[in-house]
Each structure stands twice: as structure tokens, then as C-alpha cells.
Image 1 (cartoon, one colour):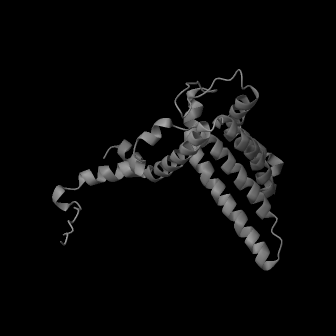
Image 2 (cartoon, one colour):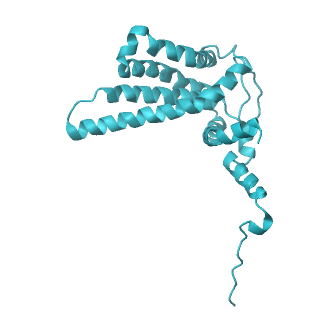
Amino acid sequence: MKLEDIVNVATFPFRAVDDILLRQYTKVTKAWERKGRDPDTVAAGVGMPGFFCMIMGSAAVFPKANELLIPFIFPMVTYGYDLMDNYVNVFERDQRPRRQSVSGDKVYDDNFPPIFKEYSRIIRLPTFIAGVAATAKCVSGLLSWYVTGEPNPDAIGYGLLGMGLLGVASSQYIKDRDPKILERDPLWKQAYYSLTEMIPVPYRMQPIPIPVRR
């Protein structure tokens, strides 16, 4: 087995989940465009507040890191390009280059070089997963607060962090929408078909005819 094949197998669960999320965000974005809404503006509406919620949440959850400004530096380094992309999409609407719309009736260019698109594709799923984890931590903390009556201020911080991460991830998925992804089978189904083809015909599952009584 080649190294490339090993990497593809090892990363398949990651790519399959990412494919599912991108497919769902593309469907929603397509519905928005049919209603005349601008998906890039929606992306900015969740991404820009999400960026600052991430900073506030990180500062609340990791107070010891505040001395090194990590809650501010890390989001700027990791997601600063997304913040600038959203800024251009909202405040420089008339001058901005644009990406291809899901409806396919317009073709635009991206605001930044292609390397940023590849970077977005790499970090969007980890960002989404981290957002879900932080939100779950918030819910757990609030439930514990309610049951025990003992204050848990970290729950609020995790809530802000979770909303921020999910907002930024949603912004990335909306802007990375792929009109062609809806024209092909999901990645997991493609893998299933490939595995089926590898099984010898005599050992494949065959449909069993059901006799019809007359």
C-alpha cells in the first residue's frame, strides 16, 4: 500500500464528516440565495461576532494565559484572515471581488490567494468540533450549577468560546460552499461502493426475491 493510500484511509473519517457538513451548509446557502440573500453577508454576520466571542471566551476560560495575550494572539494568527475576509465582504461590498455563487449565475474571485482557501478547508472541521466540545462543556457546567447550586462561572466562558468557534466555523463553511458537491454522492457512499467492488461477486450481499402470493 502506498503512503498516499495510507493517508487517505487514516483521514477518511475526518474527510467524511467534513463532506457532510459542507454538503449541509451548501444546501442552506442555496436556499438563502433563492430568497435573494447574500450568503457572504450572512457568513460575516456569524463570523465576525464569533471571532470576538472566541477572544472573550478564551480570556474567561484560560485566565492564566491572559498575561501572554494568548487569547488575543491565537485567534488573530489562526482566524485573522477570516475576519478580514468578512470585513471586505461587508464594508467594501461594491469594490470586493466575489466567489462563485451556489446558484451558478455569477462567477466571482476570492478576496485572498488560493492558499487561504486550502487553509480554511483544513481548520474548519477542527474549529467546528472544538465549538461543539466547548458548548457541551458550557451545558454541563450550567446543569451542574443548577443541580448543586454551586456557581460555575467557567460555564459562561465556555459558552462564549463555543459560540465563537461555531460562528467562525460556520463562516468558513458558508464561504467554502461548493455547488458541485450536491451533484455527487456523499464521500461515505463513494467509499461504500468502492469497498463493495473489492468483494468477490459470490460473496456480495444479494437481494432476496420475495414470492408474491396470488
